[in-house]
Image (cartoon, rainbow, N blue to C red):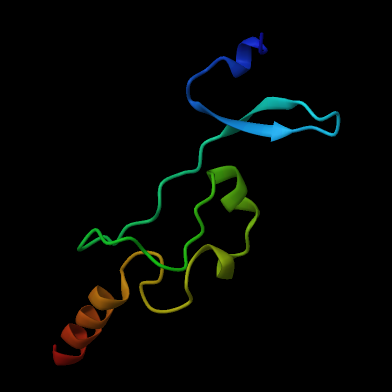
Length: 88
């Protein structure tokens, strides 16, 4: 029987083969959802899919692309926004 804290269905079950040859069940936290564009809702490229505790350990450059609106808008929406700003 697993420890009470591991009985939660929110944890992901991973089967691992141990050096003894038997297969055991390990419990891992689930991955967080991917980042999405604020305008169109498309999945953002260049953003790691990590838990908030792991994201805190990353540098600013690793968390999101270093371009205007990086980590907030997808490239298509970013281009539209830049063109719109240039016109105004």
